[in-house]
Length: 161
Image 1 (cartoon, helix red, strand yellow):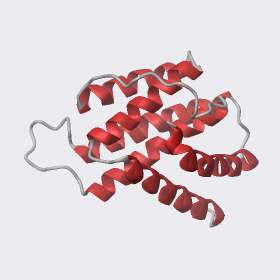
Image 2 (image 1 turned 120 degrees about the vertical axis):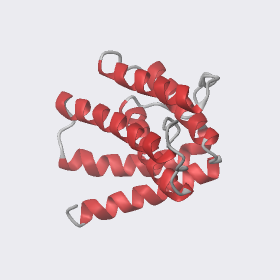
Image 3 (image 1 turned 90 degrees about the horizontal axis):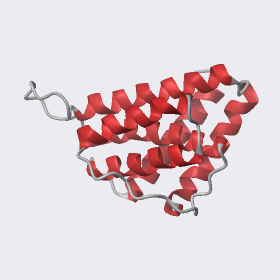
Image 4 (image 1 turned 60 degrees about the horizontal axis):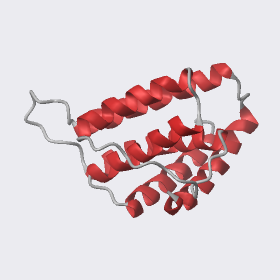
């Protein structure tokens, strides 16, 4: 996972901006878990992977990458709280299809409220990256998309979004 260190370090700077503005208490933590779940839902909605009844295809690849970046930023936020080093060992991702990966990520992310551990968030991270790869994004796409999103988020914070 160390290939994502540049993105992780940029995200830590964004996290610090949030820490400087808001308490990092249980209520904020719960809201951030909910935010991760919402972002996963928005990503799933843009892929349309579950809409078997519809003939309409997925959204533009850039829109999907933007939604994916939101998920990645939230997961890296949780990694930062637990002081995870991306050079640590990470388990292999689950061997699942896109729909199953979304369900797995929802499940594991929901459990963060009761079991906020390095092992759980590391599972979420590797499976999120696998999902991104399965959606057609390589590691460079993920890093670039995440860095662009971080810069937009910084600008939003600076302009009172």
